[in-house]
Each structure stands twice: as C-alpha cells, then as structure tokens.
Length: 286
Image (cartoon, rainbow, N blue to C red; front, top):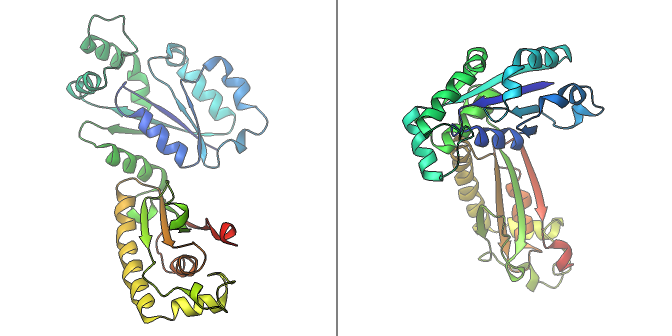
C-alpha cells in the first residue's frame, strides 16, 4: 500500500495537499499520534481504508513524530508499505504574509515572533526535508497550481494523467436547478415530446423518445457544438486542479429532452476517468 507522509512548514500548503489526496482516494489522518502507529499498521481492514493508500500529516505540532521519525519509517516499511515523504516549503516572507492574512496562530507560539517561530520550525523539520522524496516550494504557487503539482506527483507527468470525474445529470427546471452544479445547460429550446400523446408516457431512455429528440437537426447541431466545447473545457478544469465536475442538463420536467441529451452526451465526452450519468427527476416525473 502507498503510504505518504505530508510534512513541511506551517502555512506552506499541507492542508491543501491533504485535501487533494483525500479526493484522490487516500485515507488521510492529520496530526497522527505515533503512540498508536504500531496498532494502526496491523489493524484489520487497513487496506480498505483508502482505495489509493494512506496519507499522514505530521509537522511541528507533533514533536514525538519528529523525534521518532526513523523508527516510524522503519515500522511502516516493515509492515510492507511503500513510504514517500512530501515536504512543503515556502520562503519566510511568504509564510509571514500568509499568517498575517489568515491571522492564525503558529504552532510554535512560545517564540517571540512569527519569524523566530518559522526559523525554529525549519530546524526541527530539517531531518524530514533531507529525507523527502519530493519538495514542493509553494512560494509562487496559487492553490490551483499546488493541487496540480500534487496530482502530477501522484499520477505521473502529462496532463492526460490527471484524474477527472464527471457527474452528468438531467433535471427538470420546474423542480429547481441542482445546487451542486458546476455547469448548467438548458435544452428547453428543443421540441418537446410531452406534446406528442404516444411519447408522453415514455422517457428519454426509451428509443422512441430518444429518436425523436436526437433526430432533430437542431439537436444534432446543439450536441456537436456542446460536446466540442466540453471537450475543450474539461482539460482546462483539469489543468487548474479540478478533479470533479458536475454538468446538469435541464428541460421542463426532466423526463424527456434532458434525459435523451444526457445519455447521448455521455458517449461523446473524452478524456475523463469516469462519467456517472444521473437522471435526478425521472422517477419524480414518473
């Protein structure tokens, strides 16, 4: 199992990195107590905690870990896990500015000022920095760039290696726009099968309705433009570190047009790891 140690200077981006790993399927523990490490490593079902692996966040808040780091790594390796250390750093001026902006307390508050606390923290973390498999200098990184850097480390170089999961759902505007939507597409301009008596009891999943909706030249032109646009946009979202995207396609009741369009769109979106198709209001309409 992949076992990642997230460590580094306070304010350098460890929390963001932990969120990225958690979204990527890692079981993440912040400020892990070393006294329970041995029991944790031999616990039943450990391999089921995270589909990708386990990540532990450790820093100056946990001096016991810093003192026992060599023994900790040896124990993890002995348990058969692959250990990696991700070290996060930034310039002193950047860290000071970040603390001034967030107004958070530095964990080494006993020192006279923030600069002294950062200097002491560097000394404490130097052994971990020396052993790190990768050092992320976040001084000039935005949050999005940091996320992408971590994902590239996890999945290898190349934009296409970055994970992207899409939730593609149909809905009815009469029941409200889904709050979780990242993108909302309105297809109420398409001819409505509801007004054809033979099609009214059916749904967009039925061939007769799908043929009627998709057979319209207007719908074909719409799909061509929309799928081309999405295939352009998804890599841009991926490049900015967004790994989950919800695309909601709506018609009046979420029963005919949006359902047929979503089913067809799912066949023409490229470059994503997984597309989950959901018809939110289909049962409600039925």
